[in-house]
Amino acid sequence: MNNKKLRWVFFPIVACVLAAVVAVVAVHTWQRFDALRGEPGLISLVRLIARPEIYHERVVRTAGVLGLDFEGTALYLSEVDYARRLLPNSIWLTLEQEQVEGYRALEGRYVIVEGRFSKTRHGHFNLYVGSVDTVFNIAPIPTVEELRRQATP
Image 1 (cartoon, one colour):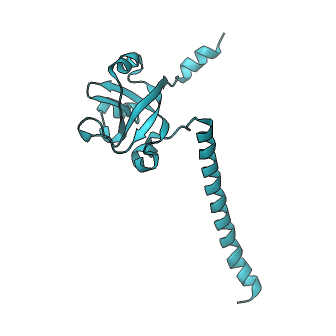
Image 2: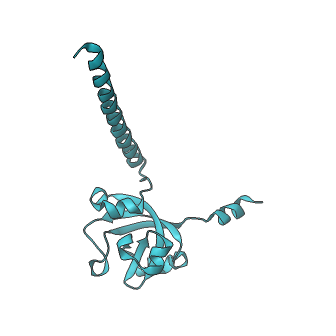
Image 3: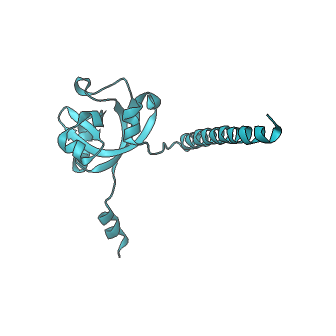
């Protein structure tokens, strides 16, 4: 094969490999930047459910619908999952009774949960994919209407 044909085959392959390496380094650097700031980035609840081994024993921030049922304190993927109590689409939250009462006003709302994730603890009767054992904070996610009300004088 002559040099011109070899270049047409070789250079696209090298470009793809180089782009992949740059992407991996960029993602790794961004994750380390979040860790250095001491503030984990927002991780999709879908990712926690699908790949719990990646986040095992790590501090995570994730969003979902808060459920505070007796023996069913969990974070659900959506309002439908919460209404139907679809446990495969949720993770267990380990909360003290005082915390449950303190967050009662947020039940059924979208919230951001910060805490340490465990893939080995599965909540009540081992029904959940994983759990957030040490919950540092639960904060409401405001609706668009709430944000508009706050913005208007």
